[in-house]
Length: 381
Image (cartoon, rainbow, N blue to C red; front, side):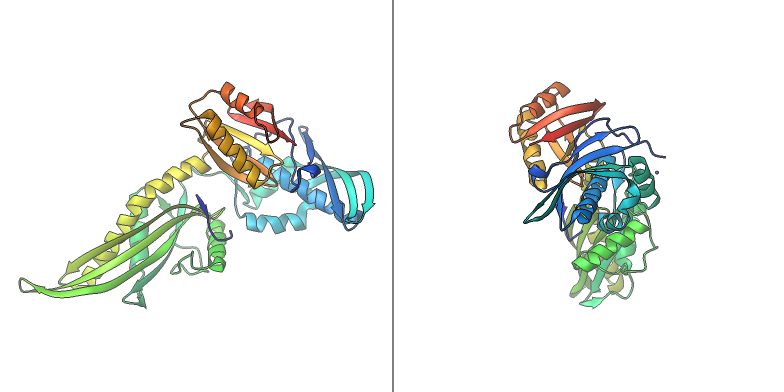
């Protein structure tokens, strides 16, 4: 999947012991031990002064706690709004902090800090704010579609209606209204500002996937055939499915169709319908497959890796696919607070996965807990 612009009843499976951290460098790794009620982390943290160092460590701990909450059936949405929310409200999720060491150097005030957070309090709050959601088996869609006819904005949103009807015919569920801004006649991919606004608006009404794109229609011929005066229109439909919560592109298709009729308006509408249906018939199955693979926890194994950077996740994923061999696929399901959740589908058994993790050379990957298909891995430099 391609990153594009930018950017329900809970039983969360939280493992008992593991490592969690959020710093860019490994030298500043944070250690976490989880009890039934609290998650305890230690960080090496610098700041302009001790107060700032404590604040930064607490924010890191809260973000890491969020990342760990995703090791469940729940998913995170609107992360671009969550970051400022945590910056403002992190204190209500922090149970306590202790400054264990202090040092002053040219780079600022250095500390080693122990922070305890409330995972259950955070989970409840994020559910209430709809940052944490339970993905549905069948996602809800919202359509933003820009339509142009003969180089003019379409006076009637015929294409959007045809697209909505086609999604419903495929078994999809669509919110037909509820978003005032941006207007549903825009292409949500027009620019980053429109893209971010469309994602936020769709998320707020409960839509999981944005269907968007551009439909361009033009008259290409007007001929007399067997005493009938036929008008021909050509439509190019570009349709894209975007996961609203994280901005990932799930499927995209471009289809060109022509239609002729004695009635020019009928020819125009037929070409629009044909192009949209053609694009949807190709893109919709891909979108459904991506939804199941990435957002419904359908993998054979799920592994939580803490204290990892994006490049390190890529390296581990590539290594596991190569080591476990043909038929193995590793998919990044979530990444927040330097905590990654990856889904692994493989013909190999658990013992092979365990051996592969133990043999990894770049840094230590130590399995500290396994609950069914969910495996907690402690990452050490």
